[in-house]
Length: 135
Image (cartoon, rainbow, N blue to C red):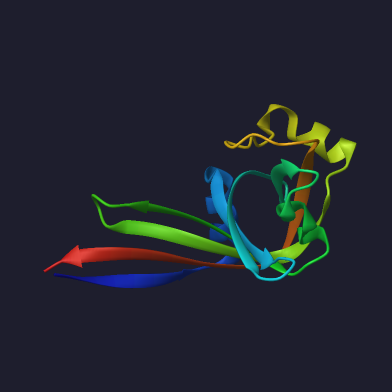
């Protein structure tokens, strides 16, 4: 058995953690049900970039409410963090893609059809760090 702590993270700490993360989940309102999908992402200069395909449901977040959650955990040391992002999404412009250079995210699953990049601009960040202490 263990006891632990939960620490709320400030805005700057959330940004720092988004920079080191590469994997997240996006929850959004699908056509007839809620969806939750894993994504690879890249973060730079206040923008989260994800890649999907033109005809995938994930591309619809530019028109729907969504939330992105990035996290990391270490089972050995029983520590972890989570950052939740709410904001707006738009198709990434050519200029934005160029600004990411070689740091564009790749989809582990690949892309069926034409690949598109979605830019997420956070307007709300919340984060927590958890740590267990053995008794």
